[in-house]
Image (cartoon, rainbow, N blue to C red):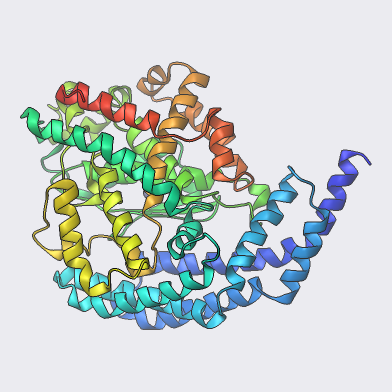
Length: 509
Ligand code: ZN
């Protein structure tokens, strides 16, 4: 039998599975569009009605996913799948999703979707009022549902928290993350300490001033466009939280927010989300609405956003090109020079807010959430304990304390939407992006010279070929190894952090 006829047979065996899968995928995307709408358009009173709608969609999706037709189609496809082919990967991913969903009763899937919508609304209100009690009941309810879900998914040496991690980062476990976070803390904490002791403070005034919202939008949008984001296949809207939602490579939505007195949150937020968006726009068109048509994992997703935000967007070479454009959009900042601005893009300073944290302290914010989540799912912490537990960890890890719960335990959206086990993917993204960037540099040569000319297409092309185009054909572990020639490690990321501490603060550890 030749390869073509074998592929033909495999495709035939796969056809019923893919037909059913396309509908499951569509229902999931419909929920995502409604979630995007909730964040960007929905009036504040719309939450309860939206919760019912989301519960119905989640219930329908769940029914279709675990149906006996799906089970039969999956079994038939498994028989024909040849190891190492895309068809085999289709079956692997479909099996993973099916087995996971089959352990969850439809009732629970609907309850989780409705709770996510409702507790999101009470979290918004609580954060606005800086009053945890407005959120505590809904959060306790959400934690209860997630414990139930995690309990149903745990088995053998897969802990309940592992089961939650697996949703975002397939195959990731507490046992793998505990030593990783210990390694990061061992290296990053002395850097942060050294910076604090060195007594050098960075003049951040070049990044501060009067930056009108309209000019920030125009500048951010032009930067997203310059790195390759296609606005005919995407949007950029104002929202309380920056995020990216992709419904197809031809429809990718980014959001942004701004600080009128500091251009950094908006610009780096937009570059970050545009990095996610480039991944979504680069996913394989031929595999859309199939089990391997989406991103392989959130860690890989986050590697794309961080690569553009930090390794490109904060580089000297990027600013050699971008500074005249910055001056044109912000005439009030026309006196800002490259040498004055660059250190303000590389501060290392313990702070309260994760999304605005620098790269030296960011992973300590994640380590805090990882510890808290593990404790929640080990039954050691309840919703009511979280404000105090939060403050205690921030004191221990970063030496800071939030003046209000709005900047403390209420700062993140994730728990309100049931996104437990999600945070560690940010740290994995940091590790992956550093390692990918090293490999891209080795393959492409002088990236800095390209950035200084505003040429980002070669880097994007490399990422398209080595990451985006594969969808979920390979596991995240395989993908990183194929793209970089070695297994994932923290080495490149930590070396980069140490180099920045040395160059900006003169601190060596
Ligand atoms: Zn991100």
